[in-house]
Amino acid sequence: MTKLVFTVDVDRDVAWPINGSHVGGSKHHFEPSFESSQKGFFALLELVNELSVPTTFFFEAATAKRIGPVWLGHEVACHGFDHEDFTGKKTGRPLPAVKRRVILQKAKTELEELFESRVYGFRAPYLHWDVALLEMLGQNGFAYDSSVVAGELEKPPLPELFLPSWRDQNAKALSGYLWPLMEGKRAVEDYVLAVKQAVSQNEPYVVLATHSWHTHASVEKGVLSEGQANRNVGRVRELLDAFLGLDGLEFVLGKEAVQAKL
Ligand SMILES: [Zn+2]
Image (cartoon, rainbow, N blue to C red):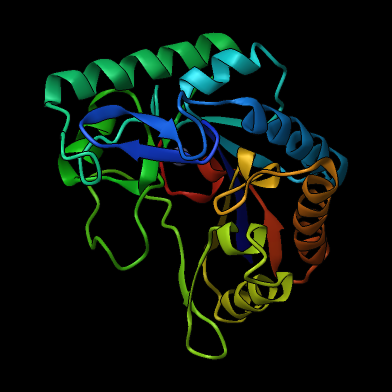
């Protein structure tokens, strides 16, 4: 049985690194914006509840605070406090260890209080990780990480829920992120085929990921109309629907798929 983990990164709209600042911005806005992310979060929450799909939400604490206390009934995981580029890969400003620790602890505490739920998992903003960051997660009460793409790191220092790296039928790279699906550059079928192949190869788990803002905002076009947003939510529905009742596949939370001691 292959486990399918549906994950949503709940972060600022079209999160974008800002040169020289460790705090993330929003691509189409002068100041960080949270409106599309909030709308998309509630639309996706309604969808996964309706379909009974257990979902792991990786919350950036600053976005979670704007969403406010909400009974979730799914997994709450952490995606930084202010969408920090911990390694400085895009901002040119790596965060020193002491600051990293403060941010991780602050974000975890904030999320646990807000949702009254233990936080086990972490996903680095922009997937910018280094081994020191993964080690620090383990030292600060996190049980697993989900920032690493399969094949990038052989022996992770704490349990890792790897993101997939696929090739489609035309040998074109496909990741577990629905990014190109939301931008109209990929079809639902591309993901369905990739997951079905993982099932036929008896993969222990598959991780799919999207961003809460991505149903309501586009990287290329900015904020979307209500009609366009509804179409995107419909695409996610079509995708999840394709997996419900599929033989050899079951939806689980990230903390259940990864071999972590909770
Ligand atoms: Zn993010």
